[in-house]
Image 1 (cartoon, protein in one colour):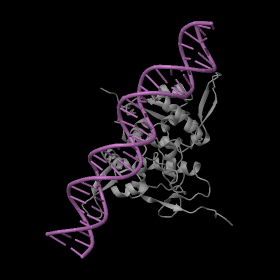
Image 2 (tube, chains in turn green, red, brown, yellow):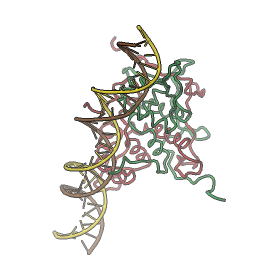
Image 3 (tube, rainbow over the protein chains, first blue to last red):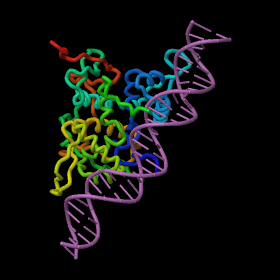
Image 4 (cartoon, rainbow over the protein chains, first blue to last red):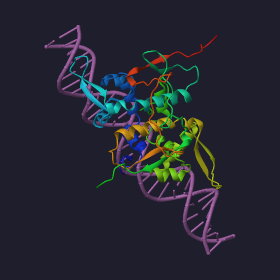
Length: 155
Length: 155
DNA sequence: CAATCTGGTCCTAAAATAGAACTAGAAGTT
DNA sequence: AACTTCTAGTTCTATTTTAGGACCAGATTG
């Protein structure tokens, strides 16, 4: 038996992204981090995750540059886990998942959380796929293609 | 030991979405479906996934309304797995993962695939978070809040 | 300075995964 | 029609991952 399959070597950014954050818990930890959770115990009780798994996930996400540790903001000797710039880059992934979930997984009256603009309290707009010039696009207007590097490997 | 944790009951659309498509393989199967893959064997060889797991995933995704089966388009007696409307709704999740992967997981010269607009051959624009009136927003301009249903439970 | 809290590690049992072997029906070949 | 190959699975076993609890060291609180 070999190890769990790795997708890193695929030339597809989707596969490589999932190789990093595509497991059962990572995106939930990241979601909580966006919501201001920073401490081991907060993640643990908030998610209901086993401590051993959480410890492994936090370590992996830190090694992979998505989280970093910092001295606890409350002045104690413990540490905070906070998102790096790279980790914050995942915000639109979370938003896209949220919008899909809202659209397809709830009945109209089911209570649920929403993503609000803090300044006005209004919900944020839906994400949209657009061309470079701003024209709206549908998935059927697109296709995936292997591209060559922009610069040559050698002189 | 109880079963694997379910996130369905959380009032968070992100958690509920991940409960449906948050495992190791589902989003890759969906990505391939967006790229035109329809047949069991295509998914299997393309992803390098074990057949048993693929069979389970395809069944689950079908039961959950993300894929549906249809008579094979090549006229054979086999069947195609195609995305439903609900499944196609996941396109922006895939795009968001792709853009994050492109930004953070590749060196400039690493070859990789890209998402192109078919009509012009240009790359699609980056996804952006915006307010309802079109103002660009940053993640730090937002917060998550539990909302009440728009309609009352009973007259 | 004793009790408790925090953030872990370690252990075991159950569940999921990987991979190979096997199979039934469809398709193609002669 | 008979034989072979292809497709789409199912089933089996070994390995890995997960869930949950026991345990533990250092920090904090009373």
